[in-house]
Length: 307
Image (cartoon, rainbow, N blue to C red; front, side, top):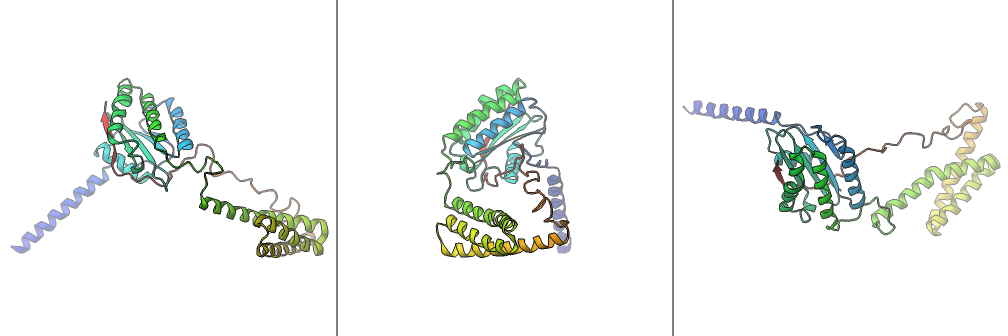
């Protein structure tokens, strides 16, 4: 008898796991985050471009990251569960601030939701998000103007976000907007550029002008002088960069000698120092590229509605 009951419990557990697994497989997939506006339902039309620019401007000026997603349906999930799952996976918003916001529109379900990250819940409480849905999105959606409804909602959300006094965007370039960590990164970048680019160029030029014996010595002296100027007169930095310049100059002299022997067929032959390839590669951050800020702790704030 106990064996039979144990078998029935095991069988029931297996059936429950199978049912849960089947339900999980039926969930709508989360699309890749490829742009600020992902119109899977194809309802935004020509208004999509203006909406993308509107969201990009908000991010440039406030730092907050807003994304719009339209889908046919979120079934079998409610739109709130689906929006939270998408927001949690996309991690919209700045990593150190968490100022993300997601608008989801499910056209066939006639449902929409504004999902708000915790940082913005003070500026956009649930009741306000619900009012924006009822007063801005729903009336336009009933007339088939999905792009206009979303744009009107974003305009109102923009005003609320600006009233929150978020940290300034890191890309705004103001002299007083960088903290100590940013300043340290800038200094490191300056020294890396100097050692990797400036020192070889100086050494190669001086070796070419003054020969393989005097050129390295002058390279060491020039690098020591420039290092002292950049570091504010630190002797250790000057000596270190002087030695680096001397070694690089000696290397350039050796390469010059080898190049003469091989009749300029080596990588440092005619065309010089990489054949002009520096900076010739395509940029990895071309126009239109978009990625998550890596933040945005979404705790369920926001509101859903229908039209």
